[in-house]
Image (cartoon, rainbow, N blue to C red):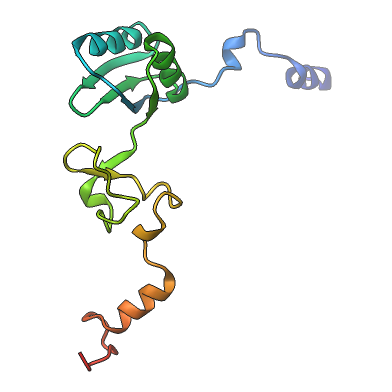
Length: 155
């Protein structure tokens, strides 16, 4: 193998564009879409089932939640639902109640959330600054904690 062969191997371009595209990962996309009736539910399902790469579509009308699984891009799925149905689409903003340290803090608690869910303040720290304790608050609470062997015994 000569020097010409090595140089030509490094300079050669792929024969098809398929090598240039990044393969999509299998993922689950959860969205919040306002679903008023069975017609809305059918419309959302129909818009997503025809999409390339979608494995399954699950619509929970009571929670206004749509779950799509497959080899899809989350942004494209959300844009498609918005375009085909004319509805406002946003990523699923809720997490189970147990995931948040202070679920009744002003930023976390949401009256519109489904039962057992609160707003996802774990992922977005700017959403609820009161849902997390500051370093000063942590120091004061640790001073009076039962787990701290050097804690104040005045209490």
